[in-house]
Structure formats: structure tokens, C-alpha cells
Image 1 (tube, one colour):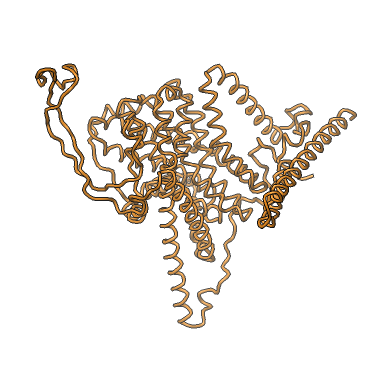
Image 2: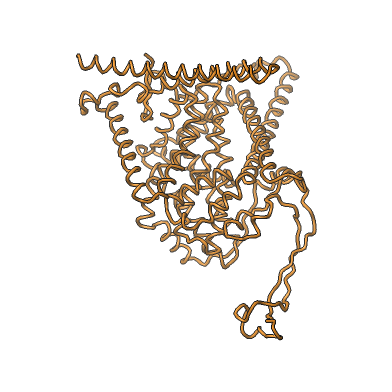
Length: 618
């Protein structure tokens, strides 16, 4: 029987050959000294320069496609995100606020956008800083799904996928574990709010202007494709009735607003701007009031100006195109890196990225990697872009997962520094609250790093990511299950329980958490100290096979996938036939699915009964 993978055991025993050792990138080409003439050497240099230029072009397109992908998600779900944020009674629940932060960031695919919505709500007084803290934590989780999806594009090779998926999910595990510890601590003590409030009150911080670094390069292309009016989502979240009827697609790029002090009629004296500026003329009441009027000067010049399509239609078009460009660029980047990083070049790069400083300064290396990750993220102004860029490097074996972990932690820090600079561009009257929210995000990530990095024993995200990488390398379909469960099913389940009340949350959540903790402890003891356990608990064999192994589920997925392919071929053959024949084809495939599923159920029940009988007789 094949080795059973526990769905709880994410800590694998060391194998005779460690699958996490970085592969040797051998040089299959002719060495430089082996070139026969000067022409061959010149050609080789030109090819290398061409590959480097192509790599930079594909990287540029990759970053631009991520930007367009974010715009597409905002067009598809931006107004829904604004509606979600508008319900202040829901946000009063910390768990609901956390889940809303996750889901909204998934909808708009940008933690910067969801954070800006939160900042605008706090600035307008619709949301207090205390209620915004769990939402900020949720945005931290939601933004880590992008590099996890990028890792899915490397599922073709088992070893590459193992490393790429682990390199991506180490970021997920860090964020989830940080929230698991710090959210209850914040609810109990409010330490993030208190410390950031002290910082804001202690310094006389002046407003400034956030720098635009990478955007200077990418904006000419992305703004030629689509430009969005970010004030629409913020307007819906803050309750502006006019924002709901406006399109997210920006039409006018240059406008002029003229404010004039005018005499206007109001319903009554209580509606006047002040008693001294109020008078009556017959049945009418007048007051002096500033009236603003906006004049449109110049239209935008992107592709979707004036098109007769809804925001949803444009969003779906951009979503499909950006995903196509994203996946294509990623595949081409990986191919180019594989062809360039060979021989001495690969040895030098791997040595620079993965070698620690000599004793006793080896511990400094990880912190320098954190600073590098923060600096690179500050330059590209997106943690998703940076972590998505290093994911294929982890997959092909240029960066180890032990080095990718501090780089991802630095990316978390880098994205918060960008938010701090953006908050400092706020007007003076809203600067304090906007900056406090940005500092909460910064301090949350610093606290997470203190928890899960300084002591090697506490670097649990690395071990969990490696365990998940081993499982997904054997059962690649489990990667999709993980993404759906971690970013959709689990947040929605927590949200439903939290909205049902604390009684339902405690009654259902606490037993599940206790069960998972007990299972994890037993699993560790089975591997490390089996003698401490009763004979029955020294393995999971007393459970049905499907309850402690993915092997039966893998057979079901394999059968269903094969039958779906068979059904597709059958339906293709029936494409020229009438609907009755195609319907028969569909129902025959469905009967096969049900038949195989029933057979699988009977076999597992038979195995369980037989196994139990043999143990009893023994």
C-alpha cells in the first residue's frame, strides 16, 4: 500500500535524499574557453544580452499585468467591496472585521486599495481606529493569495512545484499564525492601538507627498489600457449616494473645480450656515454657502473611454487578458532563467543569495534578507509583485525556502512603509488617523516577525510550508483545495459563525480548535515520542483510510478527471449530432461517476470493517 499522507501532518520525516536540497544547475553549453573563434564569443555575448533584455521585458509585462489584474478585480467586485465596508455594525465584530479584510482584498487583489478604503472611512469618522485594526490584519492575509496562485503555474514539474508552492505558502502561514496570536492579544489589550496612538501624539508629523517609484515606469502602459476612479469605492464605503451610480472607469482626467460663495435657498433657518448669514424674504430663507462646480477639461486617453460596456464586462475582459499575459510572462521568465542561470553564473548567484555570513555573524544574514525584501518591495510598491517574482526563483532552485522566508517578511514590512508614506500625503485634519492605521499595519508585521523569526525553533511557517509542499508534490490537486479552503471556505465559515453570535462561535469553533490541536500534538508524538502514547494512538490506522490518507481521495480525483476527459472527447464527437445524443453522452458519464464513487465507498467500508475485525481477533 502507498504511504499515507495525514491531512494534519505537515512535518515530514527526513528522507535519505532531502527533496529540499537545491538542485545543481549544470551548464550544458560550451564553456567560454572552448569557443573556437572571436565570432563565437561575440555571438554568445549578444545572445546573453538579448536574453537579459527579454527577461527585463517579460518582467515589466509581468508587473504591468499584475496592475491590470488588480484593476480588473476592482471593476468586477469594487462596488461590492464598498458595500461590505459600509455596514458598520458588522465591522464591530473583530472576527467579522478580519474576514471582511481578507475577502475585500481578495476581491480587489490589492491590499493598498482595501487599506485606502479603511483609511478613508476612519478619516471621515465612519469607523474608529480600534475597529479598523482587525480589517488591516485581514488585508495582510488577503494579499498573500497572489503568489500562491503564481506557484500553481509551475505544477508541470513535481520537484519545481514542491519548492515553488512551499516558497509561496510560507508567506500564508506567517500571516495566519500572526493573526492567530495577535488578534486575540489586540482584542484583550489593544496594544497596537495604544502604542501607535502614543507615537502619533509624541511627534509633530507634517503631511508630505508619497513618492512614485516603479509607477513612473509602469503607468504609461497601464494607464493607456485602463484608468480607474478610486474615489467611487471610497464614496460607496462612506455612504455617498451619488457614488453608487458612477462608473469606476475614469472618463475625465483633467477637471477644474470652481468654488463660489453664493446666496442659496434653504428649507429653514436651522439649515443656514450660521445665524449671521441667514435672512428671510417672504416665504423663502436664504443663506451664504460655498457652492462647488466641476468643469470637465480633458478626456482620458485609455482604451475603454466611452465604450458602451458595463464595469463588469470591462472587468471580465481585463481579467481574462491579464491572467493570460501573467501566466505567459511567468512561464517565459522561468524558461529564460533556466537557460541563463547555468554553470558559473548559477553558482555565483546561489552562493550570494543562500550563503550565510561566517560564524559568529551567521544570524545577521536573515535580517539583511529582511531589509532587502523591504527595500525591493518599497521600490516596486507592492508586496504581491515582489513575492510573486521570487516564487519562480524558489521553484527552479535559485533561492532556498529558508532564504525566501525572510525575504517575504521584508516584503510585509516594505508594503507598510509605502502605506505610511501614502498616509503622510493626507490632509492635515485627517493625517493623524490615516498615519495611525498605517503604523498599526507596520507594528503588526514587526510583532509577527518577533514571534516567528528570531529563534530558529519558532520558524514554524517554514516547516509547515515544507510539509504542505511535500503533500502537493504528491497530490497536486490538493493545492487547489488548499487555496479554496484557506482563502474562501475558512474565512466565510468564521464570518458566518461570528455573525451567528458568540455562543455559536464558541460552541462550534472551540471544539474544532481543540480537536485540531489534539490531533497535531498526537501527530508530533507519533513521530518523536511514540512510547508516550497508548498502543491505539501510535498510528492513525484505527481510522478509516479516507480519514487519515489522501490516497483514496486521489483515486477519486483521478477517476473523475479521467471520466471528465472522456466525457469531453465524447461530447466533441457528438458536436455534429443532435441534443439527444449529447444528453445521452452526459448521462452515461454521470452514471460512471456515481458507479465509481459507490464502488470507492464500499471498498473503504469493507477495508475498515476487515481492519477492525483483524485487530479485534488479534
